[in-house]
Image: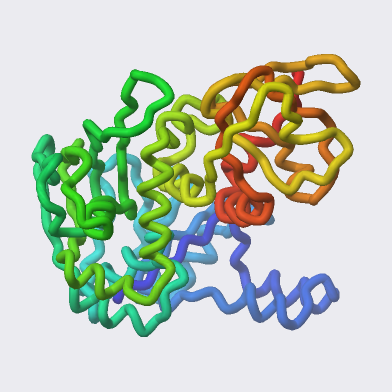
Length: 371
């Protein structure tokens, strides 16, 4: 219930606004915008200094006393503050942080829960009618650092969404491309525990709180009822199947993708399809429209330009030119399997939608082969 305004560098002087309006520099609309500064706000942080980039401190000191009492001035030295003012001068230091009294908003608990729902990618297309059901089935639980949240080989009884903190997934069995195990770390707005609920199987891994964790949980039957009739059931099954092939390990090793978040990895896993091609296969052909891209799980792929190998790609590498794929343009190179390869195929349609939601990943994939 508190309002706050921060002026930034700003000439706040009505007489000057009138002068500029009279000269035709300011339109009537712009004049009203500048002249309508929210002096009625509860907390005002206003700069001061030498015009025209700043507001004169002597003008601020002409404001009504009630307004001055709400103003904290910054950008000027203590010696320049008027002695007879009710305004305060901003001072450095954490100890001078302002903590205004704030009343909890109405329906605060519901707001926080729905905020979680809105930020979980798998639920983003759920109809608003589902919000009421979500509010009625979730519980909030807290876990201490290093506490085991899920134990491997036990029956699944809950679905988890992380509200705050991080969890570590350990001991998951998969058809790995390497013997080395890569630990999964999940954070805020990420979820876990869905596979055993959907597949009616014991938990496939231990989940341990890497930090203190606050999570929303949904009991098994309520969770299955919640997702019934949606595409989520098939998505979860597909995610579980593709993860067993070593997708997480491959993405974590990738020089193109190893820096993406676990949530971005999960979204990418949902659109990956495993494929095998024999030696010599041109998985992408120079001059042809790019309708797909690939991430290498096993083997090597040569990037060839006019018969010359300009780069050899290996485990975790991305095959395809993301700009050409986005624009539905032709490939600039041949991508040829050096030996039998296992790759993850991603369709152009799915990849374009993914990079629209994750522009940072697009920038990671925007590279020139052979450089």
